[in-house]
Length: 84
Image (cartoon, rainbow, N blue to C red):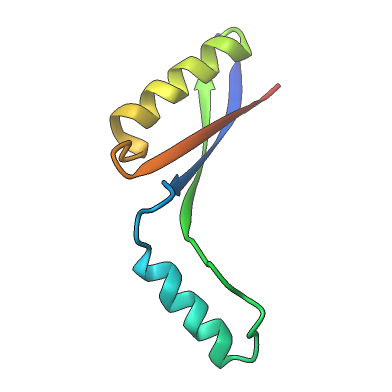
């Protein structure tokens, strides 16, 4: 039996990459009476469990998952947190 560790992945657009969905949300917030909202950027949140013996190995494996599938590293950044 391998222990499971929960990982959280936050994927965001890199600075300078246009975010039309974020602009649409910002416009909708203004329409709904929230004019103070600005520079809205949307991203992704992924939570998963990893069978691994230690947090460092779990983090490395999840980072590999991000590089290969979960994030488009050309236009997105990602951050991984492993909960112990």
